[in-house]
Length: 263
Image 1 (cartoon, helix red, strand yellow):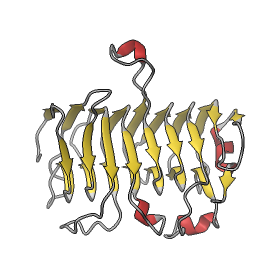
Image 2: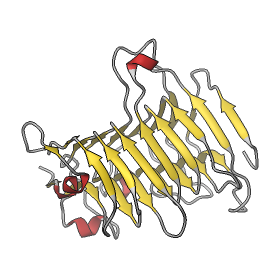
Image 3: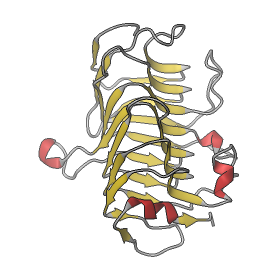
Image 4: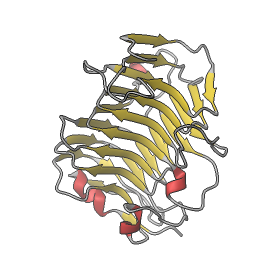
């Protein structure tokens, strides 16, 4: 999709698999050309599948703020990636570059064997963008008995929030981060809201590799920000793998102190 203003994608139970880039919203050759808006929605019990792609969906810079919405999408990997033009050795499920995207009740799950943390891949990588992660409430979903939340499981980093020179913000509300090397990694972000999320850490015994993970000194983290970050958080449930029960904290920066070594 190159330079299109808006695309409504109704997959009717279909899926995208084994692609170099599952969906490219922009131009492959001209980084500042293209972009657009994608509205995609699966069903609560039949989510749209984007599997085993080097990059599941890639949003490129758009002249106007991208207002894309992905709802009930299941990003996953259970097989080796095919080598393609991107040269992706490590998977990124959703790459958002200078765009505005909302993820509602989407899953990002790593299911294939990996020996190193980098090989686990990333859930959402946001660069100078506005990203929202939020649940779908049962009151707004006729076929849902309970609320449906976004799930980030068995990844290197569930989310990477990166900011350098442009306006960026992230809202992460009521998501489940399970057994990632780092649930949320934020670098350079001047402000974002992380509220009422569940973090479980310490149950992924892989070698920590790469510049970021090697600095973790063998520990897994719920949240990590190498520089002072404005963080507005409340009521996180942060059980460690070797702990019983959970701990509720007042401010999300303390979740960054939830460390656990894999058993």
